[in-house]
Length: 99
Image (cartoon, rainbow, N blue to C red; front, side, top):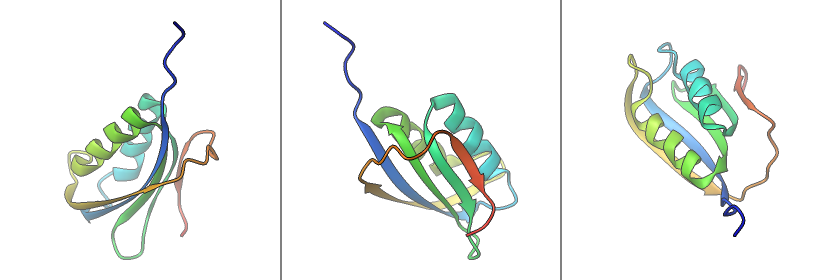
């Protein structure tokens, strides 16, 4: 009868490789906005990128698949994914500039 309720999930990502200076954060923000997921992404001092993504399970899984490739100039070596309890704490997807 009604619309099926989507399972909402939260994932914490750490992306390693050549992922800074290649428009990873800005491209991930565009992908997140297109998919309708919320959260944030930031560069870390060790050269990796960290992100927290919340939204419907299928959309979060899609952005995780994208993170394994990244934008054209990126060379992703590894993506660590930690599934966490969904909190619904974000209104949009942002780039964080400090850690």
